[in-house]
Length: 179
Image (cartoon, rainbow, N blue to C red; front, side, top):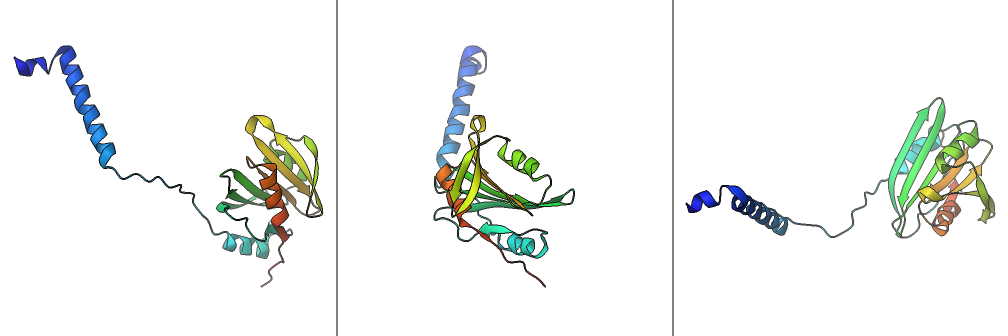
C-alpha cells in the first residue's frame, strides 16, 4: 500500500521530482566550478611574420598591446585574390576590439562591410593620422577607418572610442620580410 502511493498519481510525481532535484543539487554541489574568467590567448607573431613576408601590401600591427588587453583571435584569408588579416582583442574593459586590414578593391566596400555602415560620423586625429569615425548604434559598434593607397585599415568593435583609439594609435608599419 505504501509503495503503491509513491508510484502512482500526484504523490508519485512529487516523489520522482524530489528525487531528481536532489540528484541535480548533489551533482552541482560536488562538481568543481571555476569562478575565474577564461579568455583564450593567441600568439599572432607567426601570422604577422607570414603576412609581412607574403602580403602584397604594407602591413600594420600593434607596436605594443595595451596593458590588460588579450589577443584572442588571428585570422588570415585569401579570397578572390585579396589578402585580409583580422586580429581580435579582449580589451581591459572586456569589450571586443579588432584590427582588420585588406588590399580588397574597391576599398570602400571592405570598410563598409567591416564597419557595418557606409556613413562617416566624423574624423579624429590619432598620433598625427586622420581616421574616419563610423557608428552602428543598433549593433553597439564603433569603427575607425583609414584608406591608404595599397591597404584599408579598420579598427572596430564594441570597445569604447578611447580603447579603439588606443589600438589605432599603437599601429606601426611593419617592414617587409624578404627571404
